[in-house]
Length: 467
Image (cartoon, rainbow, N blue to C red):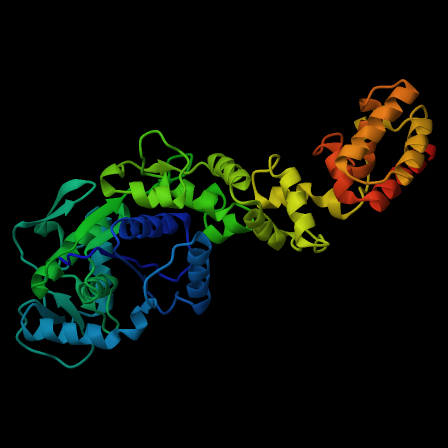
């Protein structure tokens, strides 16, 4: 095993990056960064019928959004076929692999017959010691020991034994010349000098096959760590039936990347009772010893809570920059300037959990309300309030300077003159400006909207009373 920590994340580009895959990538990234090691990205695209360039780019986009930077250029297995071919030829020459001429339809019939009997199909080794070499297509199989067992020494699950009687001489290369997943994985891990294989425990059943290939190649094995699955609320494996599962879907819903990283790190890993982590803390504290064995439940409400936390904790300029991307999606125009938009974000981020929610809450800053909250209108936009609002309008038209302090002063002075409470002026104003009875502090809203917009909307509310 290499002395330097070298790990890899190896997604298959047959779909978008799932949160389960993202959590695997994150654990590998944290493990490498904690030890000053190397984090390799390897695209396992040998399934040409399902792998697409679109999904490759989607995976890279999701990784960049999460901030999981990899070392060097990404590898693609389809660029490495000559390497796999050379190792296959070597195994065949050394008698550690053999050609299998069994027709695929015959093998399929045997598999179905075994299933009908309630048995697991296992290749019977018909071609294992075959002397003749007929013409025609063949697969290449690994010759494994027929007796004994292989023990996986897993850093999370401990020792897991697999009897060779339950395994078979598995296929290294298909009849069309395409190498299989388990073969490519081992050759890649050998040639890339991978020290630790950290992956989902759904791969645990592949590990004895791969260990037998390491043994046939005479190569040292990496350390293995199979992390628990991510489960839905029903404790079934997380899937589309539970809602959004792809990283980019959560991004498009307005979840912050810091929240997603924080949340994924806590799915199956812990550091005491701490729930909120910066990236620096995750790198400092991460270790495989603190990864659990049981599956972790994916809780969208907790993810959104974390998103709300990071919405308030991250630098204002960073949150505003991310929120800008959602304006057009919500049908809103670009802001008048960056400083003004940051002030808008600052006024709302205590009230939102996601960027989508924050931008939707900001709608009244960009456009006049299309209607008013019915209960609020019945209570505050009445014929009794109209004279007060008309007088307020005259006061605001001449107010100078236009800022929160002077706006509040003007309102308080007018309440004294009219013999009313502040709420009798503030709530009709809030309704006129936002269409709602709840908003950020009203003088903050007025200062951000400016005199012209404020007066225009108040005048529209007065006219609404008349109508």
